[in-house]
Image (cartoon, rainbow, N blue to C red; front, side, top):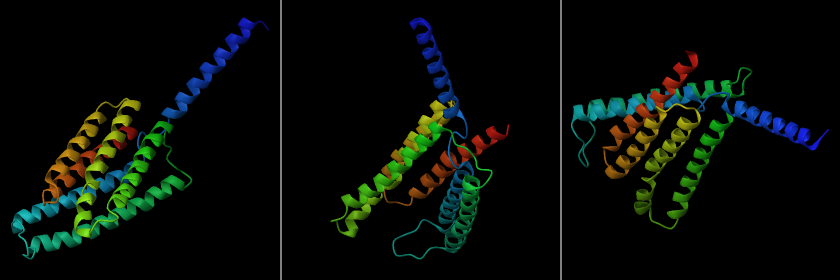
Amino acid sequence: MSDTARSATRSDESDLAYLKRLAVAGRGEPAPFLLLMAVFGGVYGFAALAVMAALLIDGWPTEGAAPGPATRFLGGWIFVAAHLAFLAALLWTGWRTFGPNRVSLNRAASATWTAAFIGLVVVVAMIRLFTRNEPSTDAVYAAHLLGPMVLVLWGCAWWVTAIISERRWLLGVAVGSFAAALALAWVGNSVAILPIMGLSLVLLAFAPAVTLMRERRA
């Protein structure tokens, strides 16, 4: 076999290997645990908005005042129901992930969301290290940055997912996550956290997860 033929064969093999890698990388879900994401965003997001509505009904809380009846009722039972719904979704997700009919996740999505999760773990550890010698009254202020940082990581994961899955509408979810992070940092430790977190969970977790599941069934 001539050198030209060997070179052509190696080139063909390289092209086939590249196409195979693309096929493997593009197979499966564009984001992990869509049902769990939808349940988490839905139950906790609507729960936070319901508590916010109860606060408006009872009147805005003042320092030292007891919460009103609507706030006491919703603040207790609605989050118990949310915890139970999330636990059920978590068990179902575990079965679908490790059971016989497991749902596959494409390689690019695995890399994207794994990186976001690792970033979250590092952020939590970073906050603990940063505040290790601070009094609790001061450390709590650093802890308030966790929410905005989570939203930033969430937005980064959706941004990459939008590009690699060619779903440009997910760029809106990513930009919304970045905007919510700035809004959450702006309001700081105040009651305004409730509507921002509630809307973030509903619009940036529940809605995109449900949309992606509907696309899968279409």
